[in-house]
Amino acid sequence: MRTGAYLLALLAWSVFGMGTLQAADLDREFLNKRWGAPLSEFQEHVQVGGSGKIAYYVNPKQAYTLFDTQVTNLVYGFYDEKFFAVYAGIEAIDAYSTIKRGIQQRFGAPKISMESRGALTTHSWMVGETRIKMKVSEASGAMKLSFYYMPLAGRANAEFQKEMDAEPPEPVFPLSPIRQKEAVELLELFSN
Image 1 (cartoon, helix red, strand yellow):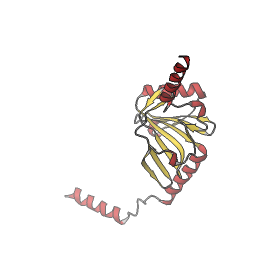
Image 2 (cartoon, one colour; image 1 turned 45 degrees about the vertical axis):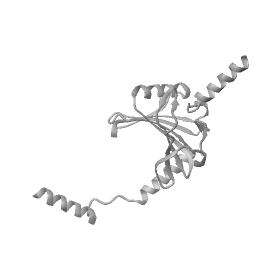
Image 3 (tube, rainbow, N blue to C red; image 1 turned 120 degrees about the vertical axis):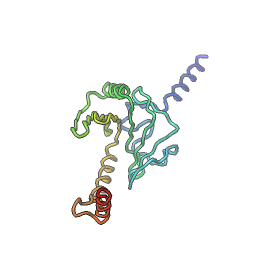
Image 4 (cartoon, rainbow, N blue to C red; image 1 turned 60 degrees about the horizontal axis):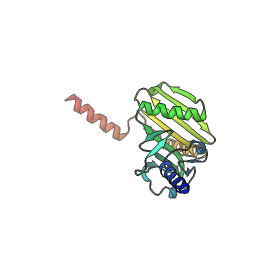
């Protein structure tokens, strides 16, 4: 009888533990998926965006618990088909506070930075080679939780910057032929 109860408890723990973040392993993995794992190990995930070597996927069939808080959707980031980041939008301020408190209890006080543009506050922790960031914009009310595996995140950022540098912004003056045509059409519309 005792063995049956033990097996039942073990089974319940394994079923309910899926999708629950184990903070001690953040240096090596996220929700039992090793950082740097190939995209082929994420069979249930569906692509939702990306550009170049960077792609974003979600698993619509999975519910998640991060630091004792339900999170409806996680976006998994891949660089060159290797797992490097996780993003979660947070909708309620009490969920943001609970997650932040849980992270602080496990990893200590964060590094805090503030930007006046957008009234953005960022709390940041390092756990081995994994960076955790929590951002809140007072201007828009948007809240986000991110996890980055820094050896790959650095390469992904470099790739993103390279793409941005390869496409210089259109100059304001002189106007490009397309912008010039649009400007003339707007002038004609408002002068009538």
